[in-house]
Each structure stands twice: as C-alpha cells, then as structure tokens.
Length: 494
Image 1: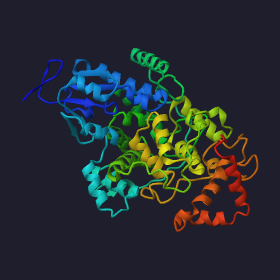
Image 2: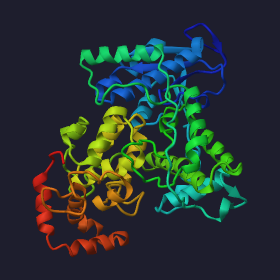
Image 3: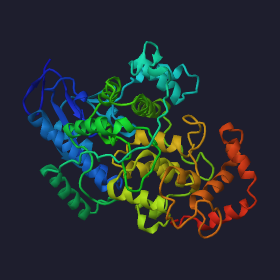
Image 4: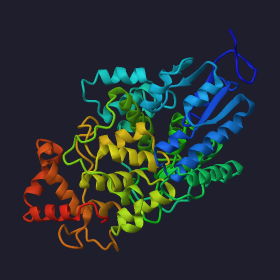
C-alpha cells in the first residue's frame, strides 16, 4: 500500500531519514526516494564541538537538502524527537553510527531500522569471521579476509605481487595541496547561524575559518580524483613523516568524505586499484591505501559494534587524571614543546591533523600523562572534523592507551622524543632536548615515556613486545628522579 508523505506525494516506500553522516547516494534505494533531514540544536548544546566541525556537518546536511529539492523534508528542531513528532509519518533509517543514536531509533514508533551502509564488509560477514577467530581478532587476519572476500588486489587466491604487505620506499616530494572548497551562500548562512548560537551561549572550541573539507559529493569526488592523480603514487612513502610546513604529506584527506557518507569506501579503493593496474601508482602505495580503508576503517567500525564495550576508562595504570583545560581548549600558545604546540595549533586552526600526529604526538602525550581514555575519546570526537564515536573508541582507546585491554594491539603506542625526532622535523629548534630526560630542558616526551613505563611496568610484564623497553627501564640509574620530575611537572603545559 502506498504511503502519503506530508508533502502530499504518494510513495511506494517509506521516507528515508538520513542522519548528517549518511549523505551519499548509497544511503538511498532509488534516486527519487523521499528523504527526511533533521538539524538538532541539542547536539551542539551537549558538547563543545570544534567550530569548523559544526560548520562542515551543517553545511553538508544543508547542501544535501538543497540538492534533493522537493524530495526532501528538512527540519530544524531542538531535538530529533521534536522533529519526528512534527513529521508524524512512517520512516526507515539506515543503522546509525553511534550506540546512542541506534538506541534512540529503536525507541521510536513507526521508524524501521535498516542494516548499516557506508562500509565494505557487512556486519554478518564480520561476525562470522570474528566468531572464527577464537578471541584473537587481529587486524592482519581481518585485512586478508577482506581482500579475499571483496577481490581487491588479488590474483586468484593470492595477493597481487605475492605479498600482503608491500613496504614503500623513498620520500614524499612537495605535492600540490588538495583542491580547496569554494564557500557559497549555504556556508554563509551556516556561519551566521553558528555566530548567533555562540552569542546565545552555545560553546565551541577551535577557530572559525574557511571550510577546508568537502560538503558535497561533487567536492568529495574532486578531492578523491586529485588524491589518486597526485598523492596516491607517494602514499605510504614515509607515511609516518610529520612536516611542520606540510599538513598533508601523502595523506588523502578523504576521511571526512567517508565519515559524512559523501563517498562509499569502494569508490576510492577501486580507482586506487585501477591506478596500480594502469601503471599510474606503485603497488606499495595502493596496498597501503587499501589497507587503511578496506582493512583498518572497516575493522574499527565492526569492532565498535561487535564488542559493545564502550570506552573502558580507567583500565590502564594511572588513567585517573582528567584532561587539563589548556589541552581541552586547544591552547597551543601555552605550550613550548614544538611538536605538541604546532600539532595543537593545527587542531585549533583546522580541526584536523594526520594520523601520525594524532597517535604519536597528541594521544602519546596523553598516555604518558595518564589522562582518562574516555575523556580523550570525547576530545577527539569533538575536536576533529572527521571525529565520530565509532572511530574514536577504537583508535584512541584500543590503539594508544592499550586500554581495551590488548584486543586490538599487542602493545601500547608509546614513544619517546627520539622517535619523534626520527619521524618529524620538530626537534630541530625546540627549546627541549630529546636526548635528555632530566633537567629544565628535558624533553617531556622522553621523560614522560620512561615515567609511563615505570607506572605501567606491572601490567606490561610478560608482554614480549615490551621486553626490551622494560629491560632498558631497569638500567636507568636516575629513574626515581625522572619519575619525581614528571610528577612535579604535573599537568602544566610543557
């Protein structure tokens, strides 16, 4: 039986409710499907999001409403519940990307929840694979399963080139930056609304600025094509590198486009594979990119739902300290350590840094200081334009603090100043000396690393991947002084 929408159109299917991270065509069953889009002001009252993240999400949602025209009902309301009461018609919605949103959808009468979209491996396939792993759900095993399952970079049942991992070589040359979006009247309207909300008392963090990431599918496709042509050939070559003058290095900058649903991941994976087969990109670069999208991104998503574990705050030693105000406010000017100051400034100014800075500068420092994993999940969620809960729980809790405990990785992502000197150009000219662990010029990452290992040694005892580090720890003659120094430094900006 046909349903009647509030606009009077007869439909042969329910109206599709699209959340603001479900904006691509793959979230609809047919191009002419009727759509509901909701802006909830309460979302921004609950948390202090980065100003540029709020702008990007609202701009993307409003651009989608404009593209759909009379096929869309676009409602602004204090809450989702208020908007649904105003519409009052049967709806369906693709599985949301957070547990809170999923539970809300389940409680709404007349709303049918469909399976998730926007990822490559289905929930059913992942559950079958995970159940077969007997508790050892390692990324490497899933990655090989996904390559075979979806026939990506495969020759029969063997990986293209004969190896699952192909190590890149060489350095990344200076590359053209990705195409910058051109703001329009919708962006101006969003900025005016956010200014008004701020004047009304809604808080944001970070600085406003020109929109830097795609808000439409056309912009997302353009950025993908630019990456395939210019950056993919160098992807993975020194992919850990941090350059103070180049925020992108060889990274794609496509995470917001995937996470807003503007691009399906296979819409990047397949063209990348085609570039390799056409001779336009080396296998090492394409394999690394595929591993990040088909492997890591899907893996993080499915673990979030499969484990249903939330943010296990306090499971690691000393994880009782709260994130200090200077870090929460993105006060980069209060920090003297060059790597942390510059990285925090980039978050403040654009709401984005690449994954090495996230892991080895921001989350690494939080690990050293013993900040609560749950607070860091929230901080990354709010402060990054591509930050969504499902991604942050795995990346922040499972990877860096080793607080899951050990479900995802076999060691914590912890490192001292020597590693940062190896992968970045920050240590040159820094007021701290990465070779020193004591004194006023002792590197907070070097000293913090040893203080962390001392605090965590009982838990890490027996971890074969940490044996060498713990042996080094036992040979440090002034370790008590280092620990006392870091305790005295406390939560003051380094």
